[in-house]
Length: 101
Image (tube, rainbow, N blue to C red; front, side, top):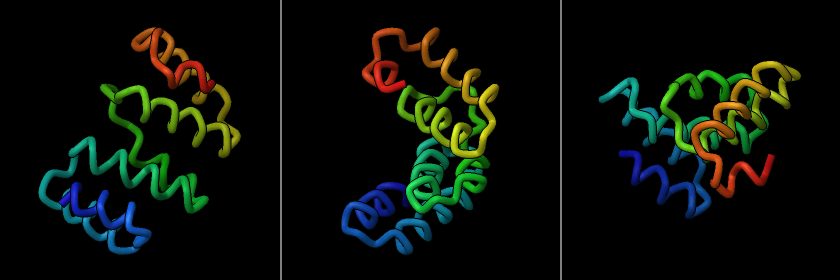
């Protein structure tokens, strides 16, 4: 379902993408890829609080940690943003996402 959602989003259909991502989470509520995709979709729509809800997985890849930093900054939660930024620095010191901070 997540792959279908990614294809729908790339095709410009965010509503269909969101439906597929939620279906994936109905099957596996902690599926990291679907959670990250929903967080990114919500962030792009300006729904920062909703995006935050999908970013709680501690084993996030660098792309998701960077998104978490951006979401928390938009919400004015600078300490939380700093925590995610520090995780990004420690876990992925050579990542291109770190250079985007």
